[in-house]
Image (cartoon, rainbow, N blue to C red):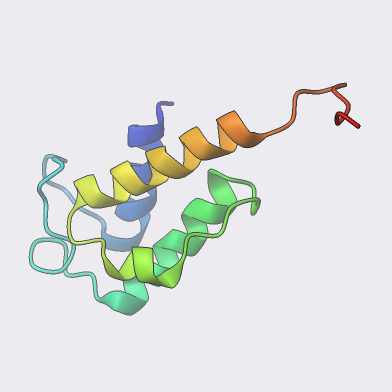
Length: 94
């Protein structure tokens, strides 16, 4: 499953959205998510997508206004995680 699909599936667990997913769906107005709901599904994202290895800052979560904001945030964290992890078997330079 692609990252975008995983994120929308997690949001869907919290709202049961029966409509078509798009990046411009408003979390508050269209999906009815308040700030506590966003924190709850952010914790689910941290657990299910990042295996609790990434913590999304509260300030960033507060900035999520649309589904696209969430996806962009998660993609950015995924990109950083993939590019900052040490290569298996590599040793630090001395």
